[in-house]
Length: 85
Image (cartoon, rainbow, N blue to C red; front, side, top):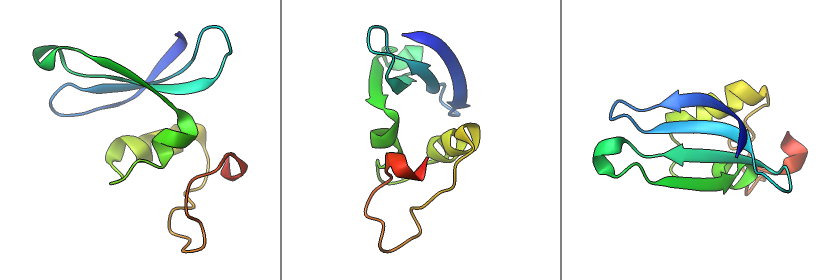
């Protein structure tokens, strides 16, 4: 994982980072659970992360960081796509 930039933190200490996966450079979201729950880390591709429902404040924080519009309100748009970025 390279170039991690934290963009959200929950009240229980979970944190979300935007970064690039080593090797292929794919943009990913790293979720790091709080230490008391084990600190487990999960990597998710950015487009997949933006489609995870229910939408949470960490999604909004990522959209703000990326500087892209939120097309989830469009009833014709079934998912967040790379063309939205």
